[in-house]
Length: 166
Image: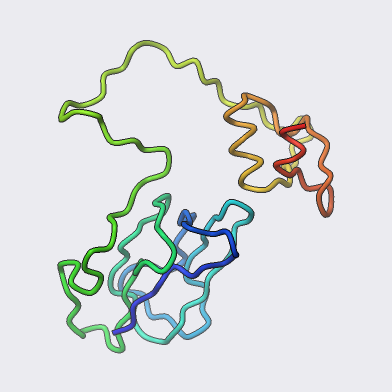
């Protein structure tokens, strides 16, 4: 059994958000197959399978955030190889946390307090996707700024965090 570990993709990376899984549980994978995409504070990167086998468990689903070096999936050599049903393969590892999810302060469920003041950002007017870093998109959303209205200074006109803060 191979433990798929969230790789450290940059010097400052402490955690990554799983953007999408390109294989499903039960799918056969070859070494080098595109397995998942992870978003860091600077970029979204594709991660390949480290080995051939069958994807047996996904421990961090899409939109979950995982610390670097955490076991995020299990690949077995054969489809019928037994895999642990508990977390004994990664004992003591933190549980997945979904993006923008804060646990309730008490044991009660959160209560809606009225209409949300956060409005969705308008898309760019020309219908094209705006090239921007994940950190820039997040900051623009926090500030309520249309990222399409910000001139990008990065490579190929990409909007950077510095552009949003300017």
